[in-house]
Length: 174
Image 1 (tube, rainbow, N blue to C red):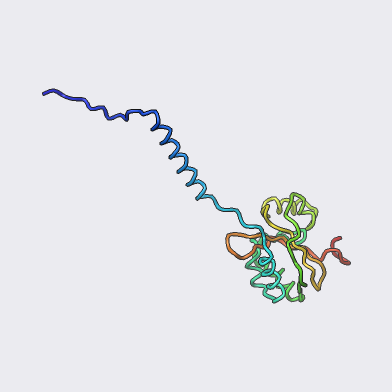
Image 2 (cartoon, rainbow, N blue to C red; image 1 turned 180 degrees about the vertical axis):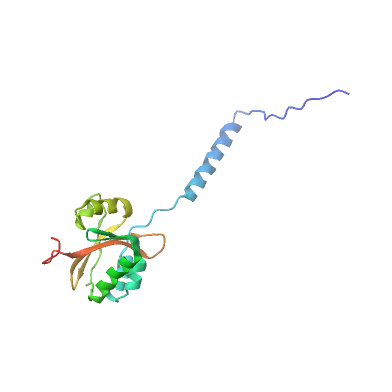
């Protein structure tokens, strides 16, 4: 009996390898793009409205839920949920009320931290915790002018990264 050898190697055709390579690369690119988290949308006026509605409604619990877990307050960084809750409860108890026309004023830049406090801790906080697509919002309130930095997260609810104020009033920042 004679043994026959069968060649199981793929015969190279000049067009097969590039087509297979291209199909593989397209599939790989699609998989990588699908796995990437989409960047958050820029802050819109309805997000600002939901923040001001919570402030004007005295809803400290909602403000706490919208606040980032690390939160800038003037030159301090609050990392404990109890501290963030105490801040919002105090502002609500003081009767903080936002007037009309609060809009996102400016995009966050490398120097935005200076509007909150010109210190190393605030600079570090902004570089580490505040996304580039966040916005600085000026709030004209019954207690003076406040700055708020907020953006969007993974949920439709806005994320508040910090607040400073009153600004430009006696005893406040200039």
